[in-house]
Length: 241
Image (cartoon, rainbow, N blue to C red; front, side, top):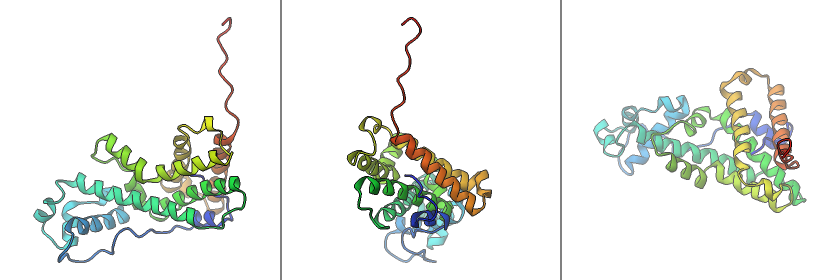
């Protein structure tokens, strides 16, 4: 999930914010059909505009044109609605990342192509964070769900699964040592997510475009070197051991 180098097509995607449409366009009133979906549509637009704190069940009911009582028949509380929106946000992020794998000109060398795909995932991840900040923040808010349920959801459908697949490609094509593969998702995802957060909500948000691109490129190189470099030397035994 590494950002691409500045100047490439995927780097441009990270530099220029873009939006991913989630669900059907919001309707001003609800007349028939799937009310839970209509409420989730309305709440997703709230999250897009203001992040997870903007999601309010009663406001979603008003936007869908139904009473609060009708809404509560489908979502017991704010937490259930936010969980549904969070799932939508994760799907949108995964869709942006998936699209990055399907775009761009494949490289003839399989090893280089697997590296290009890893960089494309990172570029799409950062591009989504900068282009749809409300949904990005919502995707990673703390939901009122058991940790096991959240972990299973992310692992099965979200960025984690896409990253895992490309890391497997790196092993298959001889870029990543099989011994370094287990758990590689965690440091790669952590680095890219950390950079995205710093660019969005941290001090790096003040960087001008050229310096932002350089930060993305530098992080890309560091992470790629870290996961594909030689294994760290074994710890020395205690003196006299």
